[in-house]
Amino acid sequence: MKKQTHFIKLKSCFLLLFCLMQFVSCQEKKYDNMTEAEKAALQQEIYDRPSEIWPTNKNSSGEYYYTVNMGAMEGYLAQNSGSNFVASNESVSIPARSFGENWGHGTGSYAFNDEYHSLPKKLYVAYFSATEDKFYEGLFDLPYDQIKEEFDKMWRAYPNKSLYAKDKYDRYKGFIVGVAPQGEIVVWLSSFSQQIVIGTYKAKETLGRLQKRQQYGRCDTGILFKINYQK
Amino acid sequence: MGDVTREFYLKSTTKSKYPIPIGKIEKYGKQYHWKPKIEYEDKRTPEKIETLKYYLEYFNGGYESIYALYEKENVVKLRNVPKKIIFRFKTDEKFLYGTGFEFQEDDIFKAFETLSNNQKEELELVIKIDEFKQISKVLLRNSVNEYVLDVPIKKVGKTDLDIQITPLIETD
Image 1 (cartoon, rainbow over the protein chains, first blue to last red):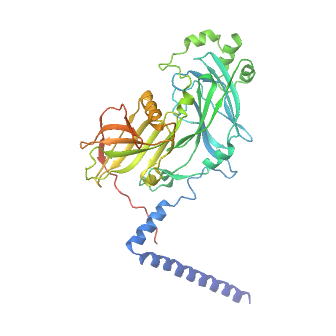
Image 2 (cartoon, helix red, strand yellow):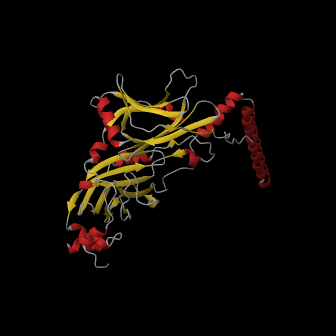
Image 3 (tube, chains in turn purple, cyan):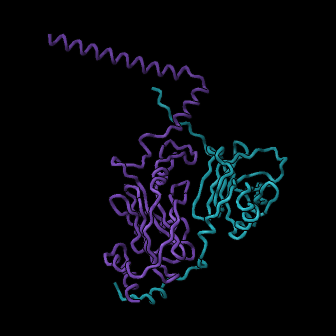
């Protein structure tokens, strides 16, 4: 009896396999019977189809992959003093030191903190301006919903003929903070092919509070602490 | 840390070669309704220009790439004042042409302010190409007037078109 059951199982398995093969061959036949125009259209459709495997910008916890960086406007010399993005469960620090003078670009040739983080809800900015001989500080609310919406977008990049999905699609993957005279702050969302302003803010001149923060030595702020302390 | 005084730090800081940019954020934040366009200086030229790409870098630090794929999206819309423009186009199936240039800040802002009529007018930023494939003129125009921008005459680069690669399809 047991043997018979086993035989039935085996038989149904073969039957299923046969059906599957038929189905696959039908699919092939369908492609072969297509006209050249239909084949070309199908090829284009496959080529244009976003890859579901890559590129993704989220990990299994729903955190996004992004970089953070900071720079200054041409003609404005400034040094970071512990600026960071405030995400729901962590601070994503911006360990740039002296800002490069290139508006819209970060400092240095590489991006900092390129890891998975939850999207930031606030931005804390603290810096010393050598041009103005002033410290600035500010804590700002970021447009979280807009940032999320932008991070979930993906678009076709330059229509190169690459076979790799990662070269064909682009999406926002970085935050850049720019500082300008009188505490003016601009935040951009950055990608390979597009960069947009998501907010402009105004930091306030400050004297005392930075000293406290810098005692914890976030990012090479020892010099600033000393400078501030000894005035 | 060492004994760095604030005075010493300020003295030791290298001075910037640029002037101090006060009040630039508001100026750079201004937006106008415009779109870029490439056209022949002589309208009778039989060849047709097919734009492949515009890369627009704005004074406000943003940038945008408009690809041939999205050419239909290259409509007049609110954009910032451009600082730099790079473009690619083709006229036949053999060659690709392209180059880029930067605008003079005061000149381009003056052009937009003059022609936009309080940001209401729709504008076109036109790159004129002559018969020798040179940029002969760059101008901003509205429905009535035009403003010729101070951009040097420059030859447009020429290169072979990329080899087409057919995407792989698994059929078996």
